Length: 407
Length: 150
Image 1 (cartoon, rainbow over the protein chains, first blue to last red):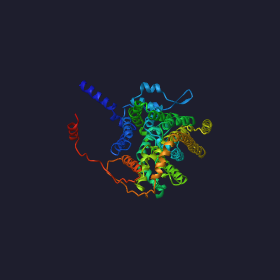
Image 2 (cartoon, helix red, strand yellow):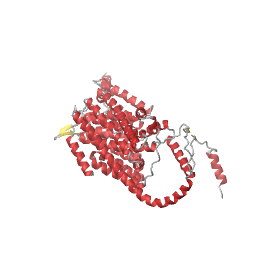
Image 3 (spheres, rainbow over the protein chains, first blue to last red):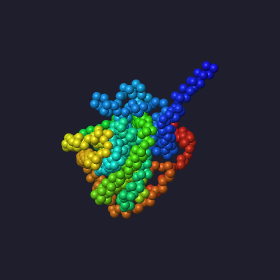
Image 4 (spheres, each protein chain N blue to C red):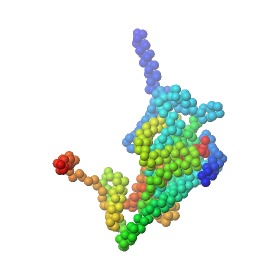
């Protein structure tokens, strides 16, 4: 009899410690809903091909973090404490000793290590040739950052805190790593949104670029403007390509020091590539390193999507403001493109302006596609790559400005 | 110049530093963020435009000197060739087979344009499709093996 009793006791305690029991305790139902939401994002990534390299790790991180008692991520470890006058103190000792796998990996996000490393890989893959050949493209890359700052106004109207405004606004830069970089530095434990929310919105909208951009581009341009055929770009010498990353690093880092980690690593990657003597390093930066960091970044950012940070009105606001940020960015780029069309004596196709949002190379492909709908033999791709890579630099500068102002 | 901008940016930033948790940002604060942001981004990128254009020009001059001599000889030859260019024909969209990337079409088009400009003709790309292999790989290998000179 005693054997049966102890068996039943053990079974009962096992059941109460299992994750299933965790769903039944107070607030456990929220985790079930979060797991269902993670399934939706997995579906979008796998079946619909929405930025699968990022959305799949993010959605799986969402699943892992919402499994009760799995203890892979502890949001309370990441709350700011006030220690010796420093109100942004995080107890990394506690995280290293008691943290779960995702806590340890999340340190790379919180300490802003992963986004600059991703930028290293992006730099190693980017050809700045079109931008060097046509430096005017920088203007469109700058204009498209208007989306960031105008969305700041929108977020402030919703009564959000400065950190939330900055984090939502940066979605308009259409740059995932930059969004994560800025939001992980700005958002505090008092914020109602998490880094995961920002990343989800940024990557979802980046996947939706082909749907969001064309209607705006068509609405703002006339058929005549869209039909402008642009000539060939001048060839760029190797020395010019070598000087460019060094020059940009120095100028931007001196001007906006907070942008240095992003711009510096981006240009370091590019210099490795253009030097032509570091093949092994370039390959690692483009492939292995980038892939490893993408996995770490995705799964840990997903882990920050706790039920109480997603299932609130702010999440809806982030999603709404995110699409506004994207649209305004596109519109600003196209409008500056129109201005340049007029000033250049109808030589510049305003469609390449929309590529100023930095989703590389998706935004440039959209310019190419929309342009080809008017003149099938018009190849705008290389012209659009100029504003596109300028947009990457522009959004890093904008990020630096936000980080300098809000702190 | 850069130092000046740097201190200017810092001065502006120091004046309008906002705490992350501050809510209900006033219109003035928001306006200063927006204006500072846009202005700094534009100043940074315009500065880059100037520098990139300047060094682009410098390289043009350096490369130009070397190329000028070669070009002068070419120009004389081209001037003789360039007799009344034909009206450009408006080309229809090339029929592109599914599965061929836009970049591939662009490359093919570029190659054809390069050829046509060399011959002074205007060629039009009408369609792009995958070539069917004339002979299976194994029989190609057999033929190569049998016809290889001793």
